[in-house]
Amino acid sequence: MKTKQLLIIQSGLLAGLLALVAPQLAFAGGLHIHPVFLGGDPPPPSSIHGGGNLEAIFAVAAKKWEHVFRGGPDSWDITIEYKWADLSESGVAYADEKLEEEGGIPVRPTRALVRFRNTETPNGFFDWYADPQPQRNAEYEHYESVIAEVLDTDFKPIGEINVGRVFSTETGPAAGRIDLLTTAMHEIGHALGLDFRYAGRIEQITGNTIEIKSPLPFAGASVFITPGNHIEGFDPMVLMTIQPTPGWRTLISSLDALVIAQLTSFEEPDLSEPPGVPKVKELKTGRLVLGPPAKQLVPDVVQ
Image (cartoon, rainbow, N blue to C red):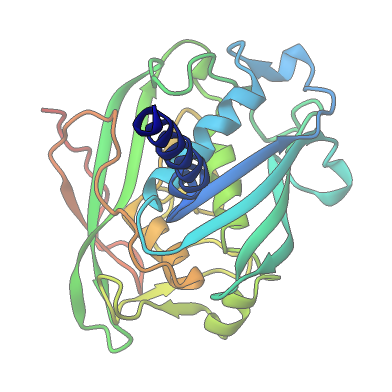
């Protein structure tokens, strides 16, 4: 009887310990984005197409960034509030982001707000495409993964890195419209560090470049950053470009991930091809981090 009671007590203790450890294991290491939808009226039907839902699309966008930063010895939590909003007075065509809090060691963004345009499409711009199945990329017939050479501050080659992961040859309601998933991923990228309010950005981008440092790969590479916190020199392939391309779905490139990792002192970003994309023949474009493209981009071939 005593043995049975002892076993019960030991089982109870083990269950208690597991209950304490499990939450820590679930959140130990890597990036954890906590999206909070604040609502707002969606755009009129004439300005948004596809039938998708902003909440589902934003959740997929957050998971894509979490996948890139899922490793590493430390944990990074950020709450990102987002909503539909009238951006007319701000002069923003599609969406904007504002860092609201930062903290921890190293200091990283911990709270931000993202707003998506909910008014009629302004003249000269494009309607939204809201994908009803944002994890599938079903409206796009071609996928392209592009690599380019990165240079140090003396213009010496460091190596070749992926600078673009793009779905194109769009069909159906995606044709000629701005992909809401791409925009969500782009604005999350700002929330994760490409924001002029963020201490890591203030400290590391004193001019118009950021230098990648060890222990990150491509240490010594220098990347142009615009005053508006966009990556320059690889337009329009990188996700963090200044303007989205209608009809394209642009994923997180290795260069996008590397810049955010440097800004936030995150040592182990995953720069490999993301899950769920076709296998492709990567193409060296001749583009350089410092300077204009050396030649026109030629589409690669899906294998």
